[in-house]
Amino acid sequence: MRRFVALLILLAAFGAWIGVSSAQNAPAPLKPSIILVSFDGFRWDYTNKAPTPNLRSLAMRGVRADGLIPSYPSKTFPNHYTIATGLYPGHHGIVANNILDPETGLGPYEDLPYARVEEVAGLIGSAGLKAKPLPDLRPAQWSKLIFNAAVNAVAALTGLPHDGHFADEDEPGDLGHLVHDLIEEGKRVAAAAGIELHEDPWEMNVLATRRGSAHYPSMLEDVEARRPTEIDLITGSLISEAERLGVPVPLHTAVYRLVKAKEASW
Image (cartoon, rainbow, N blue to C red; front, side, top):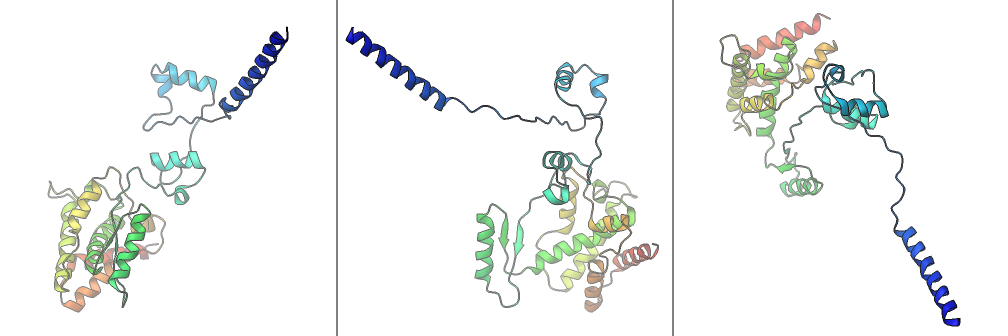
């Protein structure tokens, strides 16, 4: 009898231990969750025009939006992140569907030793970002200046975002001819200044137009907002250097004057 009672006590203790152990190892109850279903290029009425039983079932069991007022820019991924975070693109940082992620060039300024530049570039790289130390920043700066002087000014005058029009040269009337000629003018100024460009601005232009989304250059945004543009800082700087070096830049001069006239119109 004592053995039987002892066995019952042992079994009871073992059962209690199993219960405690199971409770400790049991998965935590799931917290209420929201699953957001969002589709790119999916019109609001596709579920009514095509057989979509699974989507309809989800909508019937949850909540379906009647419509959407997009944030700016009204592109897919900026708006997906806005819906998910509640932040505008200007705060969450996703401003396009495809974002170029080139290296950030770093160079010495005044008497800063190049070793210090390499050290800073290493710190940036250790954070997962791309950085490239350059002994002289001017070749990279000139490449970007020539690129911007052509692309920004043409966008401001045409109202076009930076898309395939800027690289098209198949037909006589294609915009790419003007962009290419502006870039060649800028390259002649750089050559007269003794600058060997870090990148070819025309290749930069072509690559940017192929990234899958039309970028809005800053001067186009300025024109649409009817505020002063950066024409003096960008094209104006190039023209000033051309005059100093005695290099004619008739196309850039014409574009500069047209943008200034556009600013005067408002």
